[in-house]
Length: 526
Image 1 (cartoon, one colour):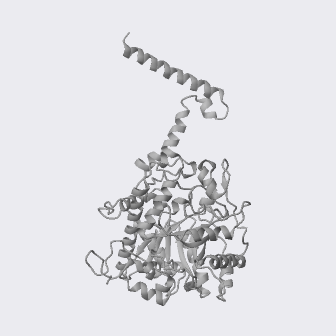
Image 2 (cartoon, rainbow, N blue to C red):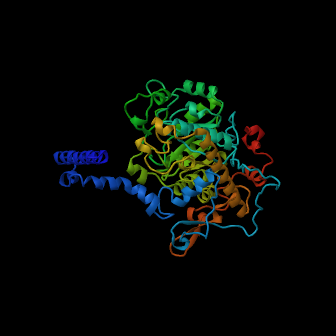
Image 3 (cartoon, helix red, strand yellow):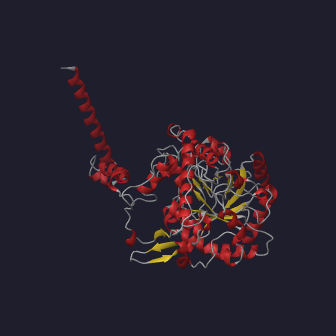
């Protein structure tokens, strides 16, 4: 008998033995009826079920079918990040006239000239500053005008890997954008040069006592030690899981994360669903002023939107001008998360456009809209969605999943399992090592520059120099019956609503500024 024949018989015997073992296991177990009734063969059902989403993503789904981001959207983001051709040929493949809620920008017959290399004011980084000075109305000591109106939304170290956070912060420095830490505290990977918004969640990670209560002294010490912290954001709720505290599965809690957060290993980290430092709007404003007085930083809040009582209460408490939030981040129910309960993710909290317009109108009617920087969050990192956000009153926007896509996310939707194949939402060493922070930092910066470029081009096509100068009547929402309505009519906006103050509008109308650096100076120099 030849060696090849002998090896073949051995392999066949091993295969038959494996099938017999599976047969015995399937027949003897009682937890799964399919495997018991159809031993061995029944296992293929689960294999095909696991492969189904991957097959649909790459083979079956059309360009605009997938969620949260379609193939076209993912391609545009990745091509922009990689500095490849992000154009599409042969015209739109969207059925515009029969697609409900289809967005159309009404361009100007006399647009502003495009900016090209060699033209006055051209800057290859396409600087677009925030529409307002953060903290100016309350006279915060460290008020500043953000250099970019598009910034990185809250994603904590813990939810993301060390290399992913490092890439985000390095990319933030290159592109001149703000990097929101998420509620997991300030990690070493946040401290690679990019400016930060430090988010304080209900767990007070990084500024908590041993019992889990808020510690002002810990917060002040951290702020003083890290000058890249430019603002503080108090997180009330998140669009993807409103009314539920942050969830970090036990398998994602490394020794380092345990130390940074001050939490034990071996069990899920479940943040409380409400703050212990305050319990109503009056106490919240006291908390905000305490933080601002102790640090000199602008302080704002982040919230998904359900009932509106909080916002009515805040407007009423702020009317006398004695206390106030510096910025308000409104998170839409379509926002992302690393892990969240399905019912909360799908059915709790209003989607962004409804949420933001209801909240904005409350503060506008109280005469407070010029005192607050409004920040939008919730799948806004695509040019047309961002333009609608600015038209209804956003002064800045923050993006999260789009930033993840820019550094290599493939929308595998396994963030909650800790085995992200791109090395982003995982802490498994061999997966984390596959993400090069230096390479991905430049990819992220490219994405932000290209997004600002597209926003600049769209704005100028509509006849304004800055997206925040676009009004809601310049956008139409098509229905699926050959009809349309302007965003202003749809959301009940009167003329002038959504615009910054006259002084800010005058500054933005003069864009491009002579240098991008002007926008990052403190308020006294803005």
